Structure formats: structure tokens, C-alpha cells
Amino acid sequence: MDKILIGLLIFVLLLGTACGVFYLLNEKNFDSMIEYIDTFKTEAENELVPQKDGLGNWYFTTDEDFKVLHLTDIHITGGCAKTKQDKMAINAVAAMVVAEDPDLVIVTGDIAFAIPSTGTINNRYAHEMFIRLMENLGVYWTVTFGNHDDEAFNYKRRQAVADMYADETLKYCLFEQSPEGVSGMGNHVINVKNSQGEVTQSLFMMDSHSYIHKDLLLGTVDAIFWNYDNIKQDQIDWYAGVIEQYDPKSSLMFFHIPIGEVKNAYDEYVENSRQNTNDVQWLFGVDGEDRTDEVVFASRLEDGLFEKIIELGNTKALFFGHDHLNNFVLDYKGVLFSYGYSIDYAAYSGIDEKGAQRGCAVLTLTPDGEFGIENIVHENYYQDKYQPKYDKEEVEMTPYYEQ
Image 1 (tube, helix red, strand yellow):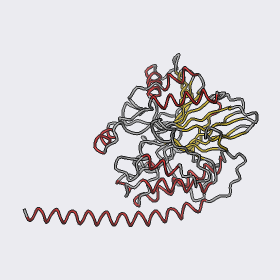
Image 2 (spheres, helix red, strand yellow):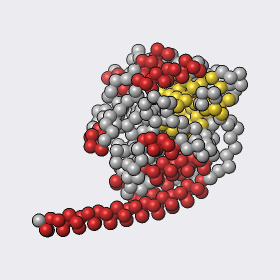
Image 3 (cartoon, rainbow, N blue to C red):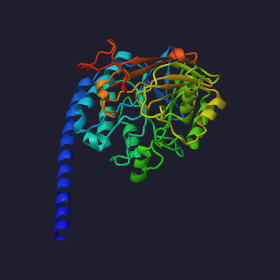
Image 4 (cartoon, rainbow, N blue to C red):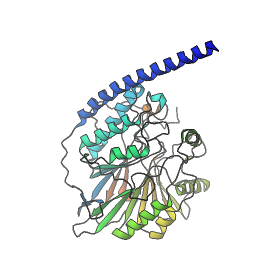
């Protein structure tokens, strides 16, 4: 018995020592990364400056085209074991933002990826690093959250993460807390108006949540078996109410985890020998996920979001991420489903050595409010037009699963 107690004591001491060492290493790494991020400071001149309306929502005013840069799945770890990968992700984001010079950047989740193999489970590091980068770039921006932004074992829960992005001292971040009574964090709308005050486009940011269960045990099981949560009815009701309030010419929606209809549409296309059907048109892109038969990792829960979108007839396209190797665009029953290019240098093993899946999407919003496939351009990062501050890594341009 004494030997067991001594063994347990030694184990606890060793574990405590290891935790202390990693804490010190990660604090030092964080300070070093902030110094690195501060080298990206720019003096951007924003021609369009947003304002808040009487309902507390941000809006831009323009009679010209409005440019949105869609980024997703940044996967900054903040851990001392992945410093190289974090630097590459930051370098890539900055290069594309600077080159595209958008009016607004929208990031659809998984900004952070703080898991034990990265050297930390403190997601504060990653979120603070990304906030610092975007504010240094001097571009207006906002985010939705993904399943990795607050793992069950992370230090900061989803509300605490949302509080970081809703900090009123941030100059360029347009993230807003959810309205009272609406599920999730960061459900908000940003409008684009013309000089006559008409809303030409409403941009909806929706929280697609993470896993079905929130506790450590069942949440981990959900993660292993891809049991993802879904958008809730009160969020759908809020969306419909905003459409009624503003009566925009059209609208777009941004979230992280694909809704079930994305999987349904993709499966229908594949089952039809990869030929278009009455409801599904394959427009362009790559379906690169090849781990299982489930190429689209959507929520398996039923919700009424798509039915409401069809009923209202206002939202022309949905934008999301989550599946890092998919970047295809489908038309399903007249609504565009558009994956974004991912950034990820850390979440998939060896992904930092592959480049076909990394990039951004450029969306052009026209003053007439029309939006179609011609308004979406997918851009790979490894083009000459994206010149990063630091050397761009050499990668293989073959698909990830062609190892």
C-alpha cells in the first residue's frame, strides 16, 4: 500500500512539473508569436467605414461593388509544439487579406485548434493571436465559431471566447453577441446599403454550434463519431425576423458546420453518377475528403433552416467550412452551397506539406442585390499574386490523400 501511495505521489509530482514546464514554454511562445504578429502592422486606408443603425447592427453604405473575403478553418494552435505551422497560417492569412484588400473579411470558424498534441489546451492563445493579427491588418472583419474554437477541455468556454471578439476596444472587429434569447454565440447581421438607404445585401453570421453534448466525456465521444450539433429554431426565427425588418434585396449566410441539406445534395449528385439532377447542379470545385464514405461532415440533426430559406426566397447562398479538403460549390433548389478554402497547417497530419486545398473565396456583392455563381471566385494561396511578408513554403499541389 505504501508503495502505491508513493507511486501516486511521484506521478502527481511529475505531472505537475510537466504542466508547469509546458505553461512556461507556451507563455514564452505566445509572447514570441505576438512579436511576430506585430510585424504585420499596416496602415490600411478604409474607404468604407461601417456605422451602426438604430437597431444596433453594423452597416456599410456604397453604390459600388462590395468585396467580401471568406476565410475558414485557420487552425492556429497557440502551442509550443506547432510554432512553425502557426507562423505559416498567419503569414498566409495576411498575404491574402493584403492582396485582396476587401471591404470585409468573414471567417467561418475553427480559428483555434488547441489540443494536447499541439503543446497546449489553452485556446486563449490562438484567439488572442488571431484578433491581434486582424486588428494589425486594419481591415474590417467578423467571425462565426466552429467546433474547435472551444473544445470541452479548453480553458475558455464559448461565451468567454465570444467576449474576446466582442471587446469594444477592438477597432475593426464587427462581431456582435447574439440577441437575447437566441441560441449560440455571435449570431449577428451586417448590412450593405446604397446611398438611398435601401439594404442591398444582408450578411448573416450564424453559430452552428459544435458537438451535441457539451461535457468532456460525451463531447469527446461526439467528436470521435462526428456527432455535430445544428442551428436551432430560435436562431431561424431571429433570421426570419431580420429579413422582415430590413427587407434586403437579397442576403447571404455564413456558418461553420454544413447543414444536412449540403450532404443530401452532394449524395444525390454522386448517386446520380456525378451528373446534375433536377435539384442539384455541380458548379465547380473539389470534393477532397476521402476518409470515409461521409465526404460531407454535416450535422445529422434535423432543423428547419433550409425550409425557411426556401420559404422566404431571399438568401441566395450559404458559406461554410469545416471539411478542410472540400471546396466545391453546388446549386441546390436555387440556393448556392459554397465551401471556402481552408488555411489549416496543423489539424490534418502532414497538411502543411500540401497546398491544393489552401486559399480563400472572394465574393463580389453588387449594388443591384443580385448574387449568383459569377459572384464567387475561389483562389488558391499558391499563386504569384499572393506575396507574403515572409517566404511562402514549398508544398505539393497533389490532393491531400494522394500521399
